[in-house]
Length: 237
Picture 1 (cartoon, one colour):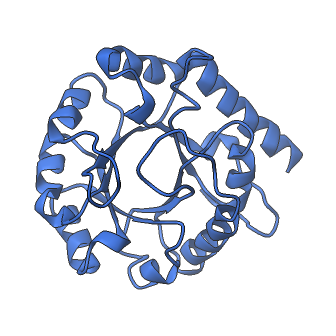
Picture 2 (cartoon, rainbow, N blue to C red; picture 1 turned 90 degrees about the vertical axis):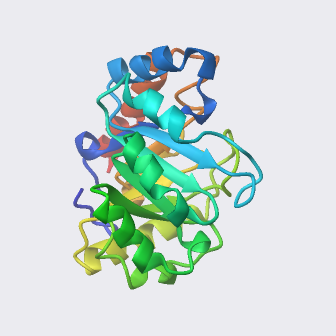
């Protein structure tokens, strides 16, 4: 997406939604994913946690493989794990289209990015709220996805950290200034109240967990609410 952070403009049609299955009903996972696909989402986001890098344990390659069998949507795998270089091949083999690792988790990040790319998979780097953008400046033209965490990773249902908006603006500036083709993705606390503002800041891919999978609305209604907020925000820009 081409964005002008100064003007705060965006095109809603260019925004991609990537629902996270972290808050989905895992007992009905195939149905949950099909519901999101029918609702018109763009990617499926899979949060992988090891109980070491973050204080939670979630899924592994077997779940990614199972998801791959029920959808043709791109699978956006987010590794919140230590020593990711030991596992990226397994996730690529399981069907990941994109593998994002944390800058904080890898000593040799440049090497890891090319390890992922050599597997035929898009490579992304995520940065936590306290991690400066300088952590990715030297590799911004080597990655396909820059993921800005707008919560501290580890659990679904957290509230968006307001200071992340400034970081998103600066990340957009970095991507554009470097003429990088990387998608600018945001993960954490995204909902209908803040998605347009984050889009105006320059993000073009949004991970949405509890704002898509919740007990208040159907998946279709939830996705429509997010899309509606984006359209309203575009009109007011």
